[in-house]
Each structure stands twice: as structure tokens, then as C-alpha cells.
Image 1 (tube, helix red, strand yellow):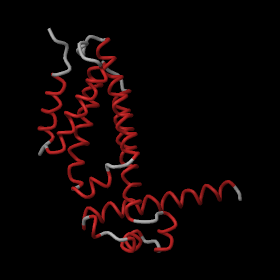
Image 2 (cartoon, one colour):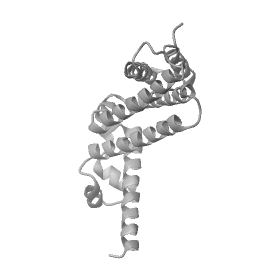
Image 3 (cartoon, rainbow, N blue to C red):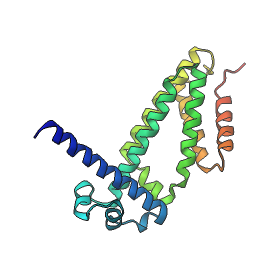
Image 4 (spheres, helix red, strand yellow):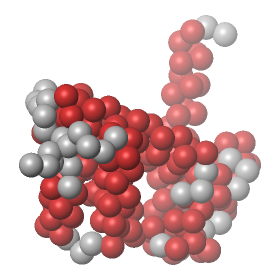
Length: 191
């Protein structure tokens, strides 16, 4: 097949996949996990059920694919903050604040949906990736004298990520920022 034809087909597949993912996420938000069926997703996204089944075997696989896409986007956003100009402390603060805000937004997933979304290899891989680059920022902060050196950076990375997971229950961005400030205070050099 000509290259242009292949690119057109791939673009169409991406568009169908994106439409399915967005439709499923919107339906779950409106009706809850139990109210979403393959038929409803096909109908709402404007494709046939047979076509939908060519892309995904069930609702769960659609939601996992949607979540994987969300995680990739969050990691890209956090990586951009990590890689921007500034001191290690400034970049660390930006990463931790955005991570905490993501955790706060995640709070709306609900029990059953949250259990489904956060129990896969994609989540484990993302958590390891995040911990690694937070640890790198902390190491840079230690070298710059902005982060305490009496605790290993790996331990501090765990402290940060666990502490900021608590943002999931916070009612406002101001509360999230206060939690980030408390977390950052625990990172400052002692003395």
C-alpha cells in the first residue's frame, strides 16, 4: 500500500481510539462504572459495536487504556517541570505541587473505578519512573545545599510521594499548597 494510504489509515485508527476513550470516560463520569456498556460506548462515539470490538474486548480494557493515556500525560507534564530552568529546589517544588494537584483531581475516581485504574503494571511503572526522577531532583538539591543530606534521597522521594498522596482528600488548591509547603519543610537542611 502507498505510504499516504497507511498514514491515513493509522490516523483514522487513532481518531477512533481517542473517541472511544473519551466517550467511555465521559460515560463513567455521568453514570458510574456499572452504567457503562460496550453498546453505549459504540453508540455515543458514533461507531458500530463490531468496530468497537476490533479495538477493545470490553469496557475494562477501554478504561485501562484511557488511564494509561492519562498517566503518560501526567508524567510528561511532570518531566517538563523537572527539566525547566531553575534551581533544583524550584523545580522540585513545581514537580511536587503539580503531583499533589494531580492526586487531588484523582480523588473523584470513586472506589470501584479507582481500584480498577490503579492496579496495573502501567501504574507500577509510572510510580517507579516518578520516584526515580524525584530522587534525581532531590540528589541535585542535596548537591546544591537546598535539601537535607542526613536522609538518603531515595527515602526522601518515598516521603514526598507518600505525603502528597494525602492531597487526594483535600478540598481546595490552597489546602494542597499547604500540604506541599509542609512536605518541602521536611526536606530543608537541618541546622
